[in-house]
Length: 70
Image (cartoon, rainbow, N blue to C red; front, side):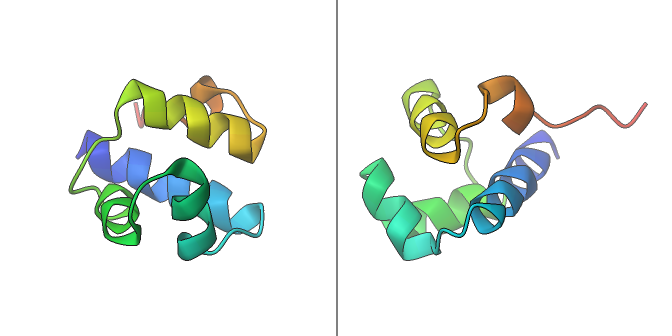
């Protein structure tokens, strides 16, 4: 469940910043299929990838972090 929330937020920010999956994955140094797995919530990115994502998206990792639904 938590991975799905991360994935949705990553996908939303990627689209907001105008990156295609292909371009974003290439800049991250990962395959499109791995990025797809992350965005679908099947895989949680390692801290190194999260750091690269936040730098490319020009946001903090905390902004990528899902908001609790409490």
